[in-house]
Image (tube, rainbow, N blue to C red; front, side):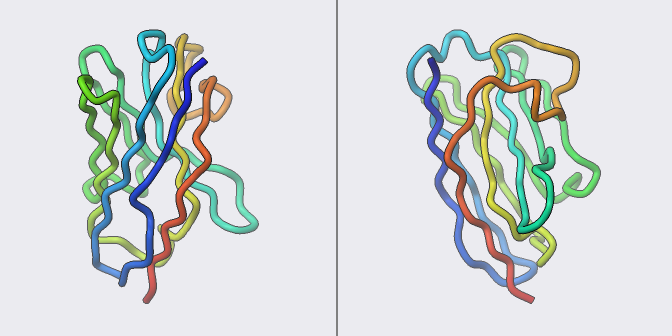
Length: 125
């Protein structure tokens, strides 16, 4: 089992920045990649970004490219999501997720085996 805990959410004005953290514990050696997803009220959970633990290759949704940066600290079992130039439409609960075996799509919620509890990000206009 892998446990994930997100932190770093909050309220920020449009144009501001936040950095989310996702700390993994447990059988972290089994994790292949970590993804960030978000879910706004009344909407489906959507892919934001993902990073592979070996090699560090990254993936982004078009809506966040150039504004968000995902990174990892292997020694701390932590993945970060630096969010800049935030917009009101970025408001959502942000979840991190861990994948232990590649199933074909880093952007699919069905790819991931473990999920955190989420952290709220609110961007005011």
